[in-house]
Image (cartoon, rainbow, N blue to C red):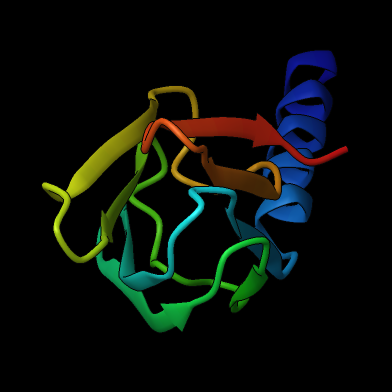
Length: 122
């Protein structure tokens, strides 16, 4: 009986965490206008967001709807690609093998060296 109760509590916590709208903030600190960004989130399905013409020092908030992408219940990947005129595309990703859900909001910052920095929002 105790094992069943613990199992139900753990499942409830996973569902609670996954049933929240999440945000991915993209911050342009590159010193240039970003032509476009593409953010892909992969689990059982893929969810993509494309934004264009992000001026320097601008922050874009990307809302991830509840239940997107659909979860495979064991892993999730966030991939971002940034396109700036005259610069090779900048790409990076984060992988989590512990759940199939976004457990946090993220800040993705492109700095003046055209490198991506990731921070978990608190």
